[in-house]
Image 1 (cartoon, rainbow, N blue to C red):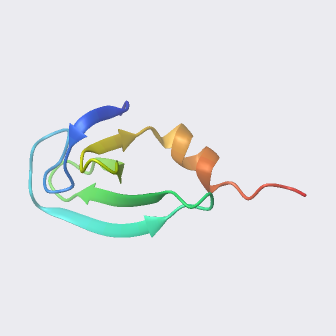
Image 2: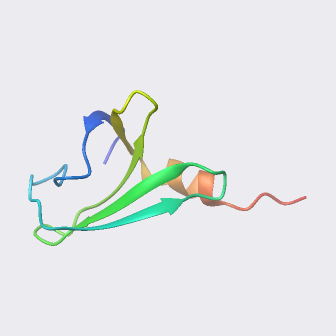
Length: 72
């Protein structure tokens, strides 16, 4: 999935189903995200809510980058 503005964690971005598993998470860099897994089509998505209340779907590469512990 690609980054998509205007999403919501209430329905699947792929099939529109509301049958989701949701987890609020904080990535290593401090980014708050909501992970959703669709029970209907098995899609997985990480959503970030901006200060203005809009949601954005984050690509997995960005989630992994923000979750990687930096070497000192």
